[in-house]
Length: 269
Image (cartoon, rainbow, N blue to C red):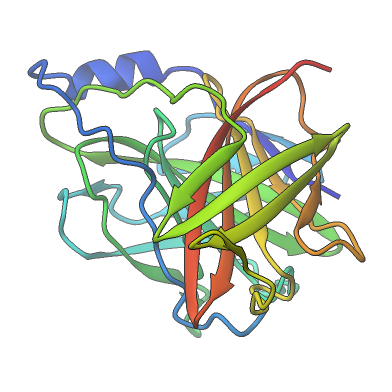
């Protein structure tokens, strides 16, 4: 199954705060963050603004400092609380981890996938670097009591910021010397990886599978954590995605390193 979260569409106001000067933004692709432990391998949650956290169903994420300095590694902390404010303690393993933290800039041009650690008091933490100024979304993706949740929190990196347009949709993408081709067969998304013109056939397990795919929709940041299809080398079921323009972030592991490539894809069904 996929997990979805629809983020409140008030990004225009937030972006205006940071658009102090109209400087040209870099056209670089997504940030590639390697997993420090690469071997280990849904409900529609609404995103509402509420200080100091964001509520979803009976759970909420209460974040620590949400204003970070661009380019500086900082400790980002948060807790998942029930409706009474008590930290949740029972997290289930999902794709090799008890917590996935997806951090994406609101123009979908910067992306990180982290795995925070939790202390005895129930606080999750991760070392996080926001590479550029702008407004980001930190999405805590987890399961508890048999239910999947995805809760978002806005992060702010002050400075001059101009949002970048999404690249046009293509069926190929490249990163770190790897070329990746996308073939859509209905809702099934098949990827093939090559390097120096030769197919890569020895992908290493990443989060319990051959790869990992996150889909985020432009505009409202609707979020899909897409599970791999069984008995297919690098294929995913995107049937849960509603119509819109999405940025697809595919991660795979090869030569002991996690690589990230991104595609723009229009979903029309």
